[in-house]
Amino acid sequence: MSYSPNTSKITFVSIAVLISIASLACWQFYEYATFKHDNGLLNIEGGVSHLVWALLLAFIACGLGFVTASRLMRYGVDDQIHITSRPGRRNSPNE
Image (spheres, rainbow, N blue to C red):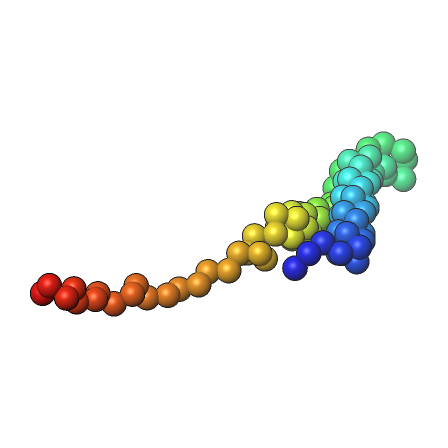
């Protein structure tokens, strides 16, 4: 299997999606850390939904990063293992 333009395009798109999901996770964590109460003071307990979204998006980004990295390493794509038996022992004419 060779690198075709389609494969390169898919790799580029998956890296772009990975970056966007990671940036969304960072943004959700920022929203959690700076969540303000009605009176304008920081209230960490109120932004739990932002924390849940941040953790979920970070988990998805890690999974996508692992899949993308394993596709870029291309283990096993070009490797073929042929298992053959050893040739039988020939009887020499002197024996």
